[in-house]
Image 1 (cartoon, rainbow, N blue to C red):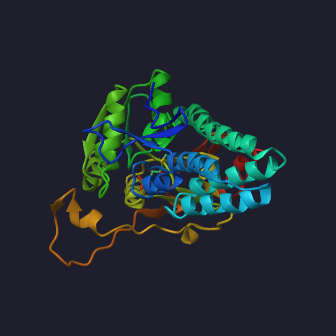
Image 2: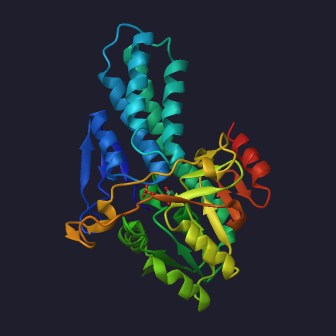
Image 3: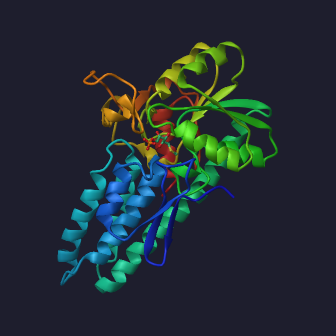
Length: 348
Ligand code: MRU
């Protein structure tokens, strides 16, 4: 059983604090949606599907606080709750997708007494969380065939159980290949500056007894040149209609390296990560985070005072560098523009 980092118990949201893993396993409890928004911004929880699920629970907690005389007054305040949660992180589209689903749920149950509507919204958030794990397992089912038996697979960042409600996207495909009886060895890029690869991917794979070797981000090219990597698989934060894919900073570099070495480069993501409204990856908003994430490691200063710093949290890999995109409805290859639309439509 892979870890589930987001739970809802006895009226409280529980988040496994991803800032302190792997040294500490601390669960934080939330009843206030404003604090949930802070948790998303501060990376207590991170990963595109996980922040969508968390925001949905945040919206349900926010709805609980609203004391309004009728649906219209309720909905005005509910939209404000959702806006606050939406303003946390700009790149992963799952956040906006989940909040939109919560608003649609409220609208389509507008006739219910408000106390029942609030219960319905919580049920919707629970359903988003349950669906997410099922979707990841379906994605694993479609993607496992792409992972060769005995394969050495490079991944970047953490697109595992910790980045979702459970099982993971890219790591879900690897888990499914292992469950199908294949021998798979994972190479995990450490993923500066947040070290999701070192802290999270290495932790969750070790926990599930899947062989994992940690490397620094600048080692991937060398290992590819030595024939020590067979394919690459990553997750995604937002995929444009043409297949251009935003994912953790450094993903683009890995994709260029994979092309140079003739290695397949796979993206695994649910259709809720596909943003058909954007024609190209150039339109994906890229989050720029605090300079301190680059100049410091925890409390330790790594760079001189006042040095200029850039800290884009994501980059965009052009579709031409992507071999296939694995979703819960099937695998897109080649003509992403047509195939991604078809896969999204299969969701109903
Ligand atoms: O900044 P983060 O940790 O939220 O970034 C996460 C990533 O880039 C993941 O690779 C992506 O969300 C896919 S997670 C299934």
